[in-house]
Image (tube, rainbow over all chains, first blue to last red; front, side, top):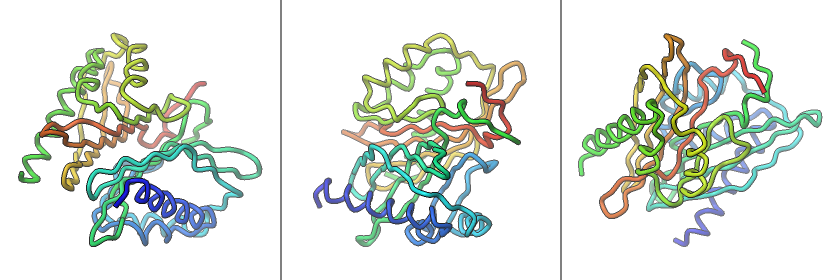
Length: 133
Length: 133
């Protein structure tokens, strides 16, 4: 399959999951994540391993995230065989306040279906944010 | 090739590059990075694209990083064909002060040689750190 077609499919999957995420629904991501997914975000003490553990984590925040809009910026997809590495910058807005993120999603194709096997979210220029323990 | 053999090779490459990094030498990473590498860390305003841009960035910090020791914790490698996703937690120590990181490295094999195509570094439990703009 053409790399451009794969790139477009993967970016569309990510945007659809992000839209649900911004309405408090983490299932958009869970439904396209593989059993062996590994996961990082800025709030967890160590990598989360596996869809079971990630589901437990996401259930604790279901319904709590509400953003007004988001921008998925400059997406890049590196395709090699049955793996594709999607990277982008991302800005979410709530009450016109932007929060800026770096994101890496690795997708793997199994039986023709793309699933996320690695997710990594982090703050862009983190030193500009006020962090409170 | 056996997945365990690939995993061991990739973890050894990463450890060797990290050892040089901790002595102020970014070339350990540059020498194993692919031309199309994409890169995130907490300090840059957007993703860095390409080995040329990453080299320029790393030259600005050459000789400035000195850590006493580091721990590469719980490395995991997901291999699919010619791509391998290495994730780990990492703690560096300087004057007994730990700094804790999340890391994702995606390696790609070209002509039998593994190279990094995606690097993403971020702070673990970032809210525990005092950030100053």
